[in-house]
Image (cartoon, rainbow, N blue to C red; front, side, top):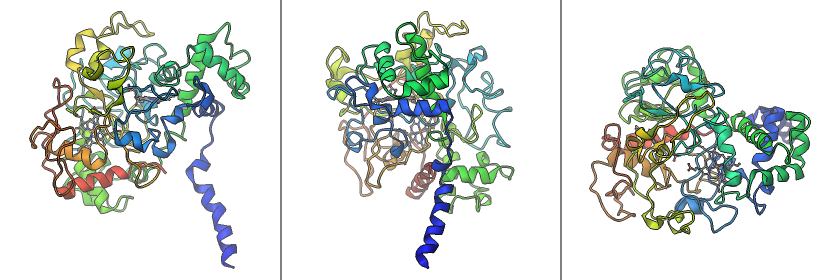
Length: 474
Ligand code: HEC
Ligand code: HEC
């Protein structure tokens, strides 16, 4: 009797699980096949998923690497890049890199809705999703016409200017990067795609003759990239199925709206899907913690719910990670050896001489390089705690300096309160928190207004972390 009962229930559970509910379009399915195909590296063995694993929130599956330098080796195992892989989920909402004062640059294909981000206007008027408005402590503070917004990679160099879509533009990179999938050229990737069964699906999606590695390598390669981007944007990757999303959906049309949560009103949000501790964490996130200043609590660019990023660049003053294996890479890839400094966005901008985008707009941003040295793009916090097992180590920050959410919250809270120290591994206090911090890797442009001395109690820090755990997709 009991067994029969179970059997009757099981299929029901299966049918409501979101992964079973996702139906991919033909183009998304093609992109998926390409994303997971280890034969598209040279030698074969490394796919996009090798560094962007669904089980860890589409980022590094290697806890050992996370515990150290945080950087993953390429298909050639002695070769390393220089930064931690960010998640590919939700990246599809990122606009082309543009000056905030330049609406002309917003172009097509970016998914940028009208009224999303008015020129230098802050986030006030229109476009910010259902009944939002500004909560205390939120808003695009310090936005000037010269503030740079958008682009992918930690330093924004997948600007979107050539393809009109940063995500598709990014997908052209890893196959040819000698430190990643190491194919010698696009033709090689094209021929590998032809050898796999995907070539048939390819023609179904893109039409007869759409895989042509002789006469149209560039076109084929672009279609490969656009298919991968379509998969990364699909509901299987960009899922919006977290506990927070349930809370968000339950809040639609109710007062007060979520971006207004504060110390006075937070109990009015009870019963919408978050427990008291999580709600307190969200309240701190939006007030005393100042987190939502950059990890925005509003939908952006047509997203159905917040993405927890402002698509902007900041220098948080994160120390260097001496365990980064890139320091030991041959001169060919790292001419500066252990003197290498990650300059972030500033370094990319310094190379923009003569650059334009598809609409012909001038993208020479060299004059903005100095003001952007040391800045990296605000990552989404969605899936920030997603891990394959409870003891799996995740690393945080572009250089994987932090090894837990506790460590990074401790830094936000006390960076400017604790003394400076030389050791990359500072001594810890009774609660396991660092007692001092090494200096910022890049001293220029460190943000001293929104972080460093937040005055959070240990309970408030814990609540913040509990809240971030609600951002894990099912
Ligand atoms: C060897 C590991 C590795 C492989 C293989 C790899 N990536 Fe990445 N990926 C990274 C790293 C590291 C970064 C960040 C680099 C940086 O910012 O300088 C990154 C960045 C990205 C980003 C940008 C995310 C953001 O928020 O800026 C996307 C999207 C992405 N990868 C997709 C892919 C796709 C698609 C493939 C396969 C074609 C792929 N990756 C293969 C390591 C890898
Ligand atoms: C001034 C803007 C700003 C504020 C305020 C801010 N963040 Fe961030 N956050 C960033 C940027 C930029 C990064 C990436 C920095 C880097 O790696 O150099 C980041 C990284 C993170 C990461 C690591 C994510 C990853 O995938 O590596 C976490 C977690 C995080 N922030 C949580 C918070 C919390 C919690 C607060 C509030 C206490 C907060 N942030 C406040 C801009 C901000």
